[in-house]
Image 1 (cartoon, helix red, strand yellow):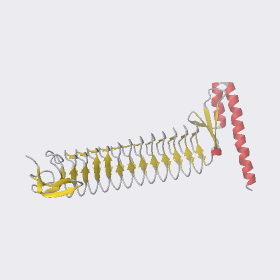
Image 2: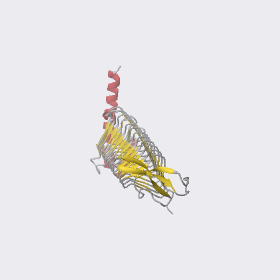
Image 3: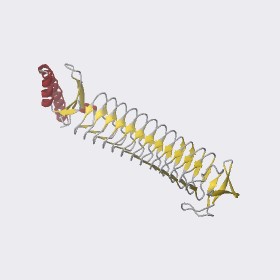
Image 4: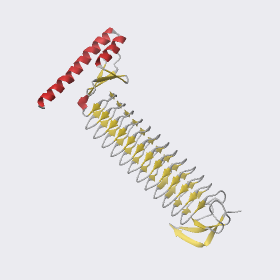
Length: 348
């Protein structure tokens, strides 16, 4: 037995389509026999099986399809081949238009717009004035709301949260517990994950990776193949690019530019390009070292050493390596010390 019929006497015209109100023919779910539902243009728009239903003033038309146990409420519009199925719920003034799919336990509400070929699934929630378009996918327990815009081939998943006026597009991925908000932009092949936070007017792009508990804010930019992780804090007008790595509790601020193969870790504080120095072990394997003046440390192969510790490390490889390293360490550290002393003198 069919669960509903079209009321041919109750008609509404929308965008060149004639829609008919539906009437329940039996009790199912929270629907009672005789209840009037929303509007559809053909009985192919709403499955006659399952507990799916179109409520209130909602409209489903132009090859859209609602099936399974999906619920369409309020003033929602589902049109132009959109598919809603499983236990999905669409509420308020939401719009689903195009070859989009919303399924499993996903929810779309408020004034959210899902268009083009976007996919919303699992337990994802899209609300506020958020827009999901292109081939974007939002799934897991992810939430996208306020005025956030997700497009291109972007993917938002796990427990990621996106809000504010954020733009996520191209092949960008936001996942784990990451949060991106305010006016931040993540694009191209960039990834933000872990418990990282990206906010204010930050730009993350190209193939940059932001993870762990990194916090990037103000007008900072991270791009190239740069990696930010640990509890690193990046802010002000900083630019980090190339294959640079910033991690642990390092803080990069003011107008500093970190580039090339710089590797800044520990509790270093960099506020200017002159606060760090990158050099090669030209006497050996040409590995690069990064000296950070604020904590007087040397980063070699991802580990911080004092000057003495570094010399000892190099001496273990060969006596000559240790001697060359000692000369370099003494030169660089004394140079920075002299500059600092001159600056202190001139400021008196």
